Image (cartoon, rainbow, N blue to C red; front, side):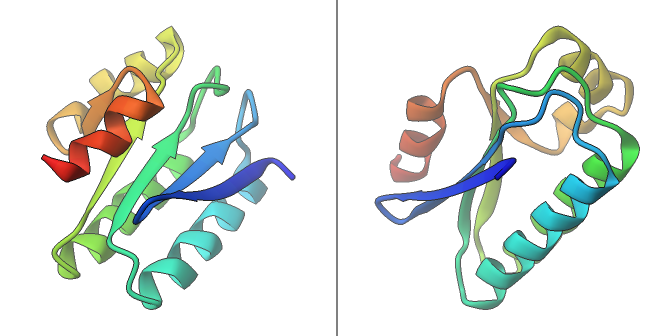
Length: 113
């Protein structure tokens, strides 16, 4: 599976193990996140460490999930940007929207502050 889901404490972690996520992976992530958010999950970390590039469709899934989880008084945080992914977030100014972290432990721990 290209997207691995695990729970650390009360934080849902979605690990995207694809170097260039396509429309298919974006749709799969959207389905996975929607299901968990609909069940009440409101603390989510998306690990993009394996991604060399993300496109606008994938970014749209992240923004949509952030909106949904914010309605539950939660947050969606991101971790693990390679240079091209970081550049995409800077270009689209999404760094202003998402909290980002350099490693998974730090991102998960940020919910307990």
